[in-house]
Length: 621
Image (cartoon, rainbow, N blue to C red; front, side, top):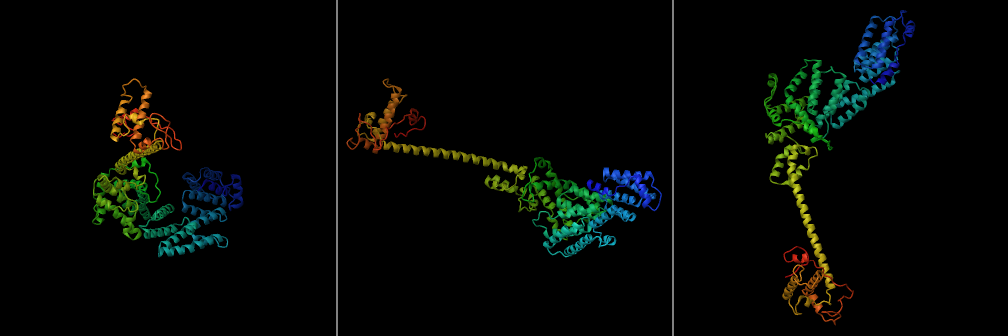
């Protein structure tokens, strides 16, 4: 019970001071005997303890001792004061989840003082909360409590509808509607009614039966919640429920530790309870498998989540799962070790621990749903199949047999497909391997099984990217070369437009006659360029700049004379609209008036044409 609520309730039941209590006692008690100061002091002290410390075992013990003393010596204490003490103990018991004793104290308080309103209201509330309608109708008249009677009538109408569905379920829609009535009406009015949880549990199991194998995220969540709530409300009502609750924890949640704790709790209540005792012994013998299976179950929720959203798997959680797969595979595929009695009752054909766990899942499904094949739909079975598959892969066991058990059409299970991926890598079909590996989420990509296969794919991808970059660079170079050629062609076209300088005698520069053929021109051009090359020229009559200018003129002369159209234009008499040539006379210009032609000469480029550096003009020898 919340401290603020407890204080407000206590305010309604404050015990008077000792002097006023005596006055009260003389006016309301049948006996004129005043209460002893010691007794009134104990009542005051107990109330102060309750106000200061709230509901706890020590305060409850103090009230137990106080009530025991009051039962022995009740004379002199007013009925109202006695009713308050019983009511206050009721509040403590409610805070400690002791509803039964709390109701008994409320009944006692009202027997002592029927006019004590707080106890009357609290009793009505608790009876309604627990669905004790018969008791309400016997004590509380309808004309004084119309709201309570209206709520009971609404509850009974809804209960009739829900019960009809539970006894003859038709389909999941009808069951879902009945479950809505349970939630919105039955539990809203009687949240502590164990019968309602029994009914909802029955409906939830029926829905699980009809929906087994579907894509519904959680078929067993309501079942687990109902069992947990019933065991809290009434822990000793049905000890068999501990066994069922334990197995739901195991098969639907993989929670081995919690499952074993549930049956241990059952055995603490009754150490001879057979179903809990048998289950506890089985857990003890299977713990070397069930413990790593629980850890693998948690890991699987990160690697292969049921929903589309993927929660990031912390590295420490991934590395925390450190199991000897070889030993685990040997245990799973090895013989079952049970007591002689259990081995005797075990059907033939159960030859391994793996088969035994599957058998127990089917038996539990048969008991709960009436169909043993529904046991194969339990989440634990799916994870168990994955575990034995991965163990067989890592331990080099019978992976073909055990990995075939994994149904992974919705989410491919990596260990099941490793053989195919490895064959692709062996054939160096990295593209196909990449397509398979790329479909796995970021958590799977952190596992060693994935990273071992991803590394050669990455290396291939890196090499491929490097080749692409080289090809791109080569293409860029070729494109640049083509661009340069295009520019050169444009320059040549421009040069052809501005063709030549008629003030220069190109024949004289090459030292050839005007009827020299192409072969003669080439030979002359080579001779002159070798003669006037800056590194070859032996004369001392020309400066370095004059030699460079001479080479440019020689190059220009050859460019014009080696081009038939340019040579014909150069040789055309000056009277045909052109200036004269050879030895003087102005610059030749087109109609739009182009500038003089200048041929830049680079000696290193030139020598490259004869085996030196690269670039420059293309010479034709």
